[in-house]
Image (cartoon, rainbow, N blue to C red):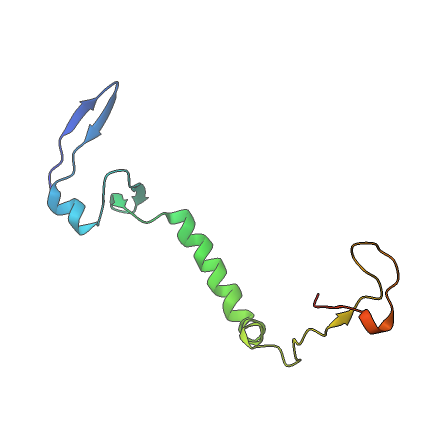
Length: 107
């Protein structure tokens, strides 16, 4: 158990967390922590309770739709070969080109 002392920080009140607590919570300067109400008082945690609720919903959706998610991971069964197209005109003049001089372009 750690005792925290309330101090003045500007026009607000604040507490300083001991180094042992910050290292155990893996906190760095600028990190956000959350004060949540629990049955036995309040709890300080680095985990966002709203995000955890969203993750519960996401996990249940992923569990229900696991077959669709697995099939989305598989490579497509059809070939992704791109054919070569020949253009019947010159790009410079936009005039028809004789069949002997038709250039080949890959689109």
